[in-house]
Length: 312
Image (tube, rainbow, N blue to C red; front, side):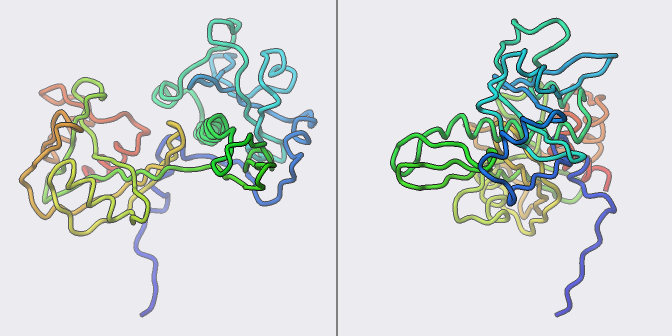
């Protein structure tokens, strides 16, 4: 059998999605245990400051800047002892550190804005938003893994934040990413969307669920779709992925081929689940649906799946 790449767009669909534009050179495999200290000693180093699900942004000349130099970060009481090295951009070190000041304590020229608002309002460039996803996920992981899962003793950050080490039992722990399947089930000229209790009023989206241990992406897509909607799937096709820093997930977007159309929704998970015609979806994307229904905002992988299907 001869292998060949299937037809694919020139630009990967993931590149249209928020948090997916990270351009930092991580150099994860070439770090020493003092790499963070070395980076912090570099006058060209830049830091992101994050805390309580928010990033601190400087406001200057009508734009938002997510980076602080060493002096600026120190003046804002950033926890430099917990800083992590994200990597390098234009040969300059890029780091992230837990913020030391609350939103109320910041000067007027700096705002603490939650991650969702940053991406929904388009406050940062794609590369900076991607760096935010990396920083938020790593800082969240370090904050919750201060003790060894094997012996319970305290762990220490190593390799600039790429791992934690337990001196008591010599165990090494590495940052985690939680894989989540998000899937748009489709039938001829219609797709399946659900409404969750935590969604904004009138919002319908693709179904989603965590991939379980020992499970393939395709199996998770089929299982979650059947559990939530009672729809059995045939073919499953991967489309795009999205780093999702809430706190450290990877959304894996797929299309699923419906084998039946009678819905049996799990009312513990969904308030509603229904089929939408292509015409209805176009109206929802344009914000002119007669019933006031909408889809997730631009930049969300759910909208990328929905829009890609609607425009196909």
